[in-house]
View (cartoon, rainbow, N blue to C red):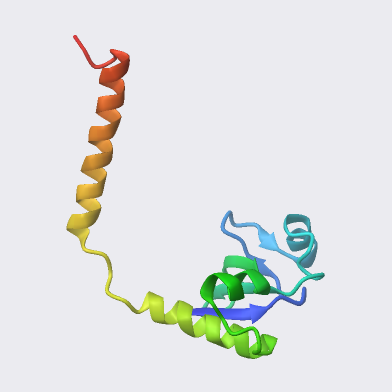
Length: 118
């Protein structure tokens, strides 16, 4: 489950690289974070930052009704994100097949350059 909140600059997050996402760091990475409404997507505890997007972008991409106020829109997006994460995990054989196909593509590229020949 993920948690979505409006970014206000009052919360410090753990970023993907292990850095602390203090207000100063967040504004350095996303200068418009307090000018335009941004949404922080975190783990359930609200500690680890998973995504950070302008609310208007999320509304557009996810087709969220523009008549909803900010809080209602954030709740609707959160529900969509959590519904998507509840779907069945991917079939491991599909992952294996994709990895093998990728290896084949790489070997074809090497052969085309003449690197795989004896």
